[in-house]
Image (tube, rainbow, N blue to C red):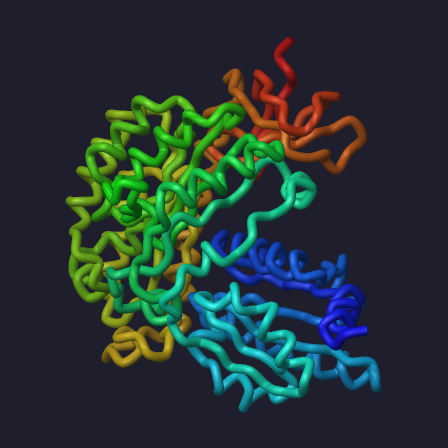
Length: 455
């Protein structure tokens, strides 16, 4: 028996567990890593305890994410010790891996491999090197297209993941907001080709996916090329994907206000398959802080943009991101944020206290805000956002809406569907997963809706 055959048999016996932190793009990346490793004969473990290889796919946006990583690595060190002679390989992937690299190995020697987001297609080869006892740190920005080197998932794998799927179309960011590590961990903006995206979408839909969410750190900045080297806009891509038979819904996230162009706004008016939901972060309502953040737009610019979007699609639900306590933020600056939130009205939003990220300009700025002040501001902001979300959900009571059945609910005979505005809807039905139903909304909960099938 050859060495290669024995190695393959060994791989067939090895189970991998991937723990995902953070955003939808990390969820997508974890799935593609899983697809790549499955193609090489590795098996996916149902839980962390039965795994031979554990990969922690990390996020570096918030300070607590890094703290969580090192806490988990401490528990894995104990797990490895308890296993004795049974081997356990531990790896860190994702944005913290990219940002901290050798520092992770120094702080947590239990780690065997570090892989940045641009190197996932090298993972099967890297694991074989690690099995020889070699620690690997691979965080360089490779020139080859990692997506072209990652295998498409098998149909049965897609079906297990459900009828809604993520599809990354763009990575990285050129905006260099002073609070953000993305340009340093994901690199500059790169757009996948039209051909690649359509092929992956067709593969998903052929396996039963009904709803696709296009992903990117700056997704509306996507400008991929077709086979004739013609550059497309995101609106062009949305209309092209809508032509694929079997697709029922399209979404995209996360967007930057500077790239919300006329054609994309028009797509919200003219493309019924594009759901009336938009995540469009502004971070603060203060022009002074927007300038310090290097957002390169004003609060007035954002307000006018929202007016144009709502004129094109009056039914749209807006979501946003907000940071409180950015360096130099005064009480007056914070009041401007509250005023903007009050005026715009958000169906949902994410809000955070500013946390300095090493290597970003914001971390070295003067006038850092103390934690108590940040906490007070965050509480006030979240109360306002919570009231708006409650009001939005209650506004849907009595309405008949289309939902996409996604999974069984917690109660017998209950199924969970997804509304056009993203929030879940629970109802009693025997309709199978993937069905589109007309549902009358009877009740609004804190983060969801209760409906009844409209015969």
